[in-house]
Length: 210
Image 1 (tube, rainbow, N blue to C red):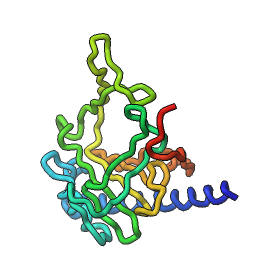
Image 2: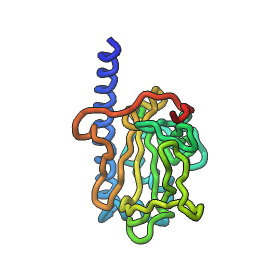
Image 3: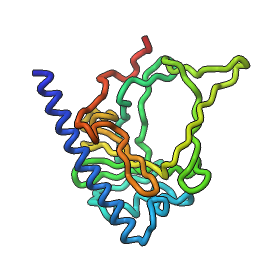
C-alpha cells in the first residue's frame, strides 16, 4: 500500500510538472512575441532585475500574487534538494523565501532568477564554487587555499517552480523543479521530463553526514 500511494503521488507530480512546463513555455513564447524580442537573452537582460522580468512574464500568466525580491510573502518554506547535500557535515536546503516570486491561479509558485552579476557577455558566464568533500567540507590545496571549481554556463537565468505551493514535500525532483532559460530555449533539468520517473531521496533536514 505505501508503494501504491507513493507511485500515485509521483504520477500527480509528473502531470503537474508537465502542465507547469507547458504553461511557462507558452508564457515565454508570448512574452517574446508581444514584446518584439529576438531571444530570451533580450528578456533576461543584464541590467534588468528579476522583479522586472517577473512583471513582464506575469502579463502572460494567471497571477494572483506577486512578491518582490527581498520582501517575501509567496514562499514560507525551505526546499530540499533531490538527494542529500551536505555543508560542514549537515544537510542543507534551498532557501527561496525572499526570491522574486509569484503565486499562480493553479496553486503553483514560480521563482525568477536573472544571472546578471555572473554574466560576462550575452548569457555566457563562469559558475565558480569551492570544491567540497562528501560531508560538505571545503577542500583545501597544499597551501591551505580553497580549491575552486569553475564551469562554463550559458544560461541567461532560471525559473523554479513548486507545482503545489506549500503542500509538500517541497523538494526538487518531486514537486519542485527548475528550468534553465537559454537564449533560444527553456530547458528542464530533470530526467522525469523525458522518462516519467521521479528520482528523489526521502530525508530529514538537519541529518548529520554518516
